[in-house]
Amino acid sequence: MSLAPFRFADLRQASDGRAELLAGLLAERAFIPPKYFYDELGSRLFAAICCLPEYALTRSEAGIFAAHGSDIARAAGPGRLIVDLGAGDCGKAAGLFPRLDPAGYVALDISADYLRGALERLKRRFPALPMAGAAVDFTRSLDLPDSLLAPAGAPRLWFFPGSSIGNFNPDEARAFLARIARACGATASGGALLIGVDLVKDKAALDAAYDDALGVTAAFNLNVLNVVNRLLDADFAVADWRHAAFFDAAASRIEMHLEARRVVDVRLGEQSRRFVAGERIHTEYSYKWTAAGFAALLNEAGFSKLKQWQDAGGGFAIFLAEP
Ligand SMILES: C[S@@+](CC[C@H](N)C(=O)[O-])C[C@H]1O[C@@H](n2cnc3c(N)ncnc32)[C@H](O)[C@@H]1O
Image (tube, rainbow, N blue to C red; front, top):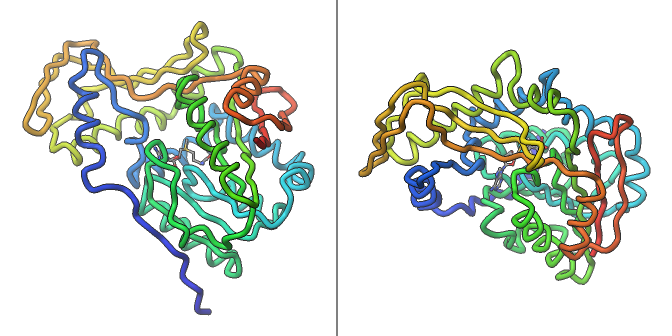
């Protein structure tokens, strides 16, 4: 069978990243923004994390869609253009297609090759659905060329599952959600946001979710050094670093770091840096919200109409939000 090709645009800039990475790695408290996790291997490792017994988040979210999918679909309404923010393998959106009956699908992700492969497979499963993809850094812009947003008149459903919103601190999260709220209001046909949020829970469960027994999350975290080596012409040796992750209850967030096992001298392109033994590079926050706290955040961002569903254990919430 010959398939209509989906439209795909690489909207990343060639220079994206180098200056940002260097500034982070030369900062007094070194950091690497989490979007650099996702080269092809990083995306595959994240997919493996979602299968781990300790990482209940994915199963809790899937359980809500299984239990309340019809209700969620009724509330969202059919015929929408789904815009998937950080689509990954596109599996979550695809699982909703039969119920949501969308008019089209646009997948956005920073991991270009992984996304393209996922869309190729998805197009085989849903050959009649208009589909497009774009390699973008959504922290920079949510503006997409009209050529990708088809069918043009369909109301948009911004889809942001997996508690990816947790990677933003509360101020950044509010600002990011406000951009989506403005985008919802900017089209005559309107728009809504369907978003999944991991909720505060027991510290031991959260610690284990980000430091699993098999070491998959450790591999995911350490792989960012390979990404940095390529982008910056750096010479990090993965064996010099160990994965460190823990829940900070006072700040309501998981912190993920890479910790130097010994004194490490690293070339960072034209620059260099010495890390003392035990010094850390911060790689990710994953904020955990209360349902009430997240509802308030959505309100502050400009969403006034909210619906909410939770799993039986109260560990995860899905919100449908309209401005
Ligand atoms: C935590 S994973 C979630 C994947 C999938 N949506 C899910 O819920 O299982 C985050 C996804 O967002 C993508 N991503 C991370 N930062 C991004 C950015 N700044 N711009 C675009 N995509 C990004 C990653 O490549 C990855 O696929």
